[in-house]
Amino acid sequence: MDSVQSTLILMVVGSILAVLVSLAIVVIAAHFVARAARMKNRSYASFFWLSILTSPIITGFVVAVLPFNIDDPRHPKNKAASTGFLAFTNK
Image (cartoon, rainbow, N blue to C red; front, side, top):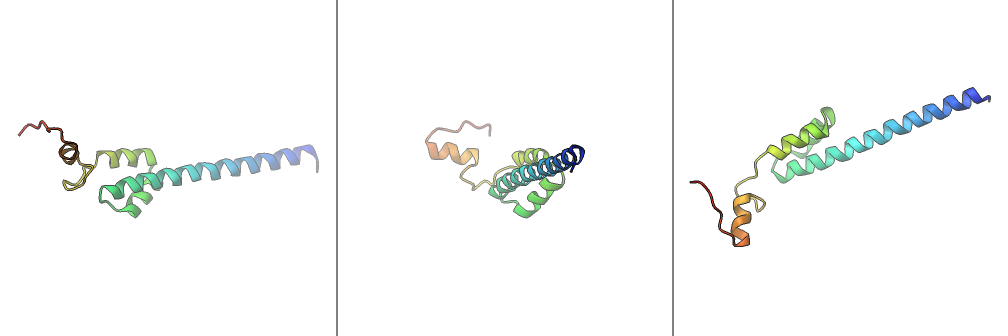
């Protein structure tokens, strides 16, 4: 094998490795987005595949904007009640 062929093989293997690492990062990020969506009582599978198809960043913003359920302990009103602080609300 001459040096041109070995260089070409190294470039191809490096490119395949870069693509696989990129895909792994996207899948892991999609998993975290889908887990956050499930915590807000949304479908894990729907947000996982939506995140894979679009972008985990875009779908992550969508999940961040989704409201909590009123009975969720992470809801701001429930956190204020559980910590003993008075919640100042405009009613």
